[in-house]
Structures are given as structure tokens and as C-alpha cells.
Length: 420
Image (cartoon, rainbow, N blue to C red):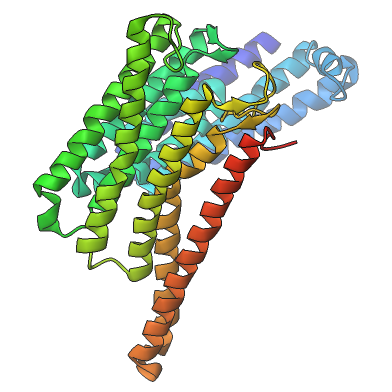
């Protein structure tokens, strides 16, 4: 009997899933199909589930108190069939909800077909797939905006993020390590960092007057970032594939020379923030004052602290001070928890170009909201006062951020870890 119930439910639900996937193209029949897949079939399965549990539980034994209890419970064929009905009912209900949600979110029906397949076969994996589809919408919008602002840098960043995804897949199947860390960790960090640098530069170039974006100075700046960034990432990735270190590798004259060239390349990349800061300060007259100030300060601090911490790491012969190799580290970032680590200050330094422009943008938005309601009553004096407040807020954030970076560097030099 249980075999028949298993096969019957599976056949009905399979037909329901096919109808659900095809429903966007069924015209007037679509609401009926989704009522059947979202209510009728799950409801019938739910009633059958209740009946199976009522009949089988007393004889099954076990329970939900431990894994052994669950194993005993579902060792009974009646309870196992009930579990199958539970699985089918909830997954079909969720799949129908996702189909309705996809229409509301503007996700193309073709994209939902693999999402439905995953929900049917693997349940929660379908929810994850839909979450990725939903998250892809603002990402696509961001990429389009970056493409409008500066196409070559936008595409370069996109290529690096695609390479990051490929490296992540390689890390899942390649168990080799260097210094106790997976060989693909360093390439992934540099891919993410250079991609974010390229996209931030593209965004800020977009704040320049449209005519100036095509100037020789902007073209040279973008070309330098792309060529130097690509060379850095390519060499680091090649060394990872070979299972060899890219940094502090003096095993041969070639590797020593390449390490020096990498240092020059890193300095060149961070130095690119300075001419961009000058361009924005000189030409980006349409930017809100607080936003403009945040962009300039962020770019300058990126060079000062990013390059400064990088030079300190090189002179130290490594990022850690007073820490033994293989000790505890901060997850994802890899910063030492056993001693000082200059990479903390370096991280803060190179990301000043994202933090401070964002702070300036938020301050400008706050000033605009505060000025709007009082504009008609107080006149331009009140607006100017709010703008001045926004500028002061950016200076305060910049001072706090610089102090935090200096503190992180001092803590590393003293041999103290970030935490603990």
C-alpha cells in the first residue's frame, strides 16, 4: 500500500510542477493552475499526511528528540511515506509562492524553470536560487550604471568578479595550501580588491563632466588601472595554480624580480587615486559639496594609508609582527589573532575610497532632506547652513577613519592582535 501511495503522489506532483512551470504561458488558465498547485494539491497532500501520521505514529516508535529517534521514527514505512508527502506538499506550495513572487519582482519566467526544478528536487536550494535571481536585479542595474559612467573599467571589474567565482570553484576542489592557507585564497582577495577599486573609480569618474570623461587624462588613468591590475592578478593567480607563493618569494632571481615589480604595480594602482582626487576637486562642480569632499578625502587617504601600510608590510618582510605561522586567524580576512597584523591597516587604507565618498553622499542626502522643508521659509541661508553641517560631518568621519587606521597600524607594530 505504501509503495502505491508513494508512486501516486509522485506522479500527481510531477504533473503539478510541469503545469506550474508552464503557467506563465497558459493565459487565462494560469490562475486556475496556480490555485491547484498552491492550494488544492498541497492541501490534499497535507490531509493525507495527517492521516498517515495518525495511523503510523503509535507503531513507529522514536521521535524528534535526537537523530537516533528520528531514524527510528522514519524507519516505519508509514511514517516514511508521510515524510514524503510532507516534502511534496511544502515544496509545491513554496514553488507556487515563488512563481507569484517572480511576477511581482519582474523575473523572467524562463529563469524560474531551473529555480522550480531545484525547489522540487532539493527544497531549500530553490529558495537560495530565487534569492540569487532576486539579488541579481540590483547588481545588473549597478553594472549598467557603471557601464554608463566608464565602460572599460566596469567591464574589467566584471571580468575580475567572474574570475573570482571561478577561483572559488577551484578552491572547493583544490585542497593544496601555502603557509596553512588555501592556494586560491590570495588570488580571490586580490581579484575582489582590484575589481572593487576599478568599479569605485568608474563610479567616481562618472561624477566628472561628460566632456571631461573622454579626456586623455581619464583614458590614461583607466588604462593604467586595467593594465597594472590585470598583470598583478594574473601573476598571483599563476603562482597559486603552480602552488608557489607570489609574495616574499626569493627562491629564484625571476621570483625576486617579479615581487619587486608587484610592489611597483601596487604603488602605481594606489597612486592612481591621486590624479582622480585632483580631477574631482577641480572639475566635478555638480557634486554636492559634502559628497565631493568625501570623494577627495577618501581617494587621498587610499594612497596615504593603503600605500603606506603596503610599504610597511614589504619592509617588515611579511604582514605579521610577533605572530607564529599557522596561528588563529580572523575568518575570511585571515588576519592574525596571535600577534600584530599590518594587513588590518592596509585593508582600512585601501577602502577609504569607498567609505568616505559613501559618508559624503549620506551627509549630502541628509542635508538635502533637512533643507527641503525650510527652503521656502528660511531661504538660502538655512540651506547653506545645512550644507556646511554636511561638510563638517565628512571631516569628522575622515578624522575618525584616519585615527582608526593609525591605531590599527600602531597595534600591529606593537605585536598586538586585532582581537584578544
